[in-house]
Image (tube, rainbow, N blue to C red; front, side):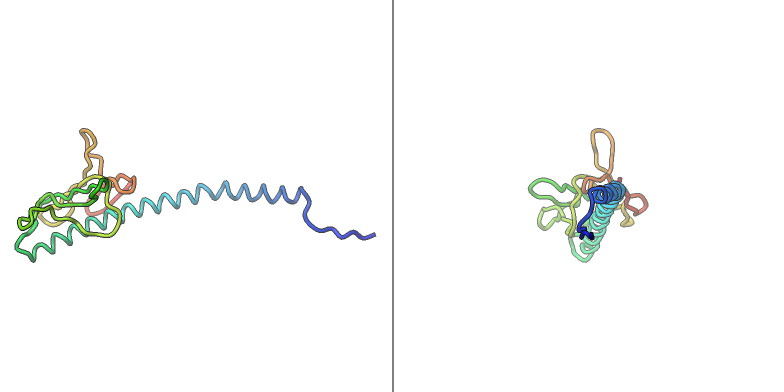
Length: 151
């Protein structure tokens, strides 16, 4: 007599489930690592964007009578009611600080200095008595020789 068997046995189903669980255990840390690297890269890109926008803002003031003088410090506060990055100088015509206009994430806190040659000289965020970098998206970033590194 011939029986028509349809479906899978319990052993076959358990074997497939175990294989899928092993694949998930191997893949999860890899995926989480890729996500962390992407977040760090986004933080670096945001800081590059802020620095580039600050330099562009400075260059555009060279065409105006009211100019930003170098060296200057750009301070970013990405929290509160008015998150922004601003120069430490004020516009004589309006008595307001120059704002750095850019698209992207504003660093949570910190500042950087643009030296007389127009290069980024120092990136700091003071925590207590020590300088710890500028914070972007939860990453601590520093700039050395125009290269942004975040950790």
